[in-house]
Amino acid sequence: MQGEGKRRYVRGMFSRLVARYDLMNTLMTLGRDRAWRRWTVAAAGAGPGKRGLDVATGTGELALGLAQAGCRAVGLDYVEEMLSAAVAKSGALPAAGRPLYLAGDVLALPFADGTFECLTTGFALRNVISVPQALAEMARVLRPGGRLACLELTPPRGRVFPLFFALYFGRFVPLLGGLVAGDREAYAYLPASLKGFPSAEALAETMRRAGFREVSFRRLMFGTVALHAAEK
Ligand SMILES: C[S@@+](CC[C@H](N)C(=O)[O-])C[C@H]1O[C@@H](n2cnc3c(N)ncnc32)[C@H](O)[C@@H]1O
Image (cartoon, rainbow, N blue to C red; front, top):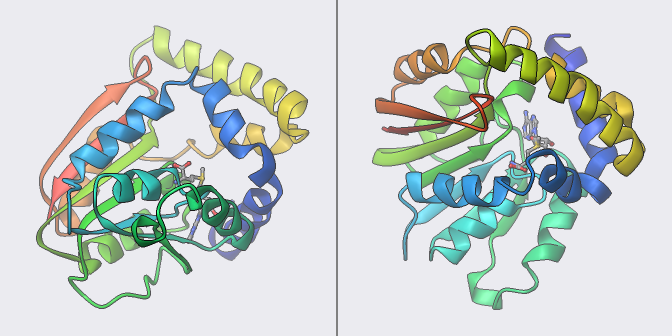
């Protein structure tokens, strides 16, 4: 699936998944996503007084992490239902420290050049219709010296891990999605969305071409997840 058809499909799918989205993340990652998100926020250089943006924020976990690290945080997504869940969740923070949530598209971010010092994005790039354009937009809204941290599934390498991936994400996760979220098809999209997605090395190269430097990455969860960090 490509282009506008993919955009419509992804948007419709995420608007259906909101209620069980966080629970499914916890189950699928065996609770490891909490630590990965902490590392992502740290890799973005989040800290007091900095302006932080979480792109494709979903239910706002990374935006909350930015806010808790002291950033003036903004979370952006194009699914209103996701943003409503994110707003409800941030109610636990003092009003002044809550992220601001905005509707918008990753491919045309509604911010001036150089607005942010820190940028996070989690499990989003597989879903956009142009990874280079999304990264170019992220580079544009970051200030020189600002940092990007990107958490995403990655095609596993070697002989054993692709097998593990095929069984776990191809068989078990859709089953779990059917039982827990009542939407087996949406969770079958997850492994399908990785087909044609760049390797961790190729994604690092795409980041360099988009204007980032000092690009590095680490693999997590048996090489099925990658955390990329880079500087503008
Ligand atoms: C798998 S969820 C990830 C949510 C969150 N970042 C996390 O780490 O859990 C992907 C999110 O990307 C959003 N998304 C996908 N394409 C987008 C686009 N072009 N513009 C804005 N949001 C987009 C979806 O609405 C969804 O909330």
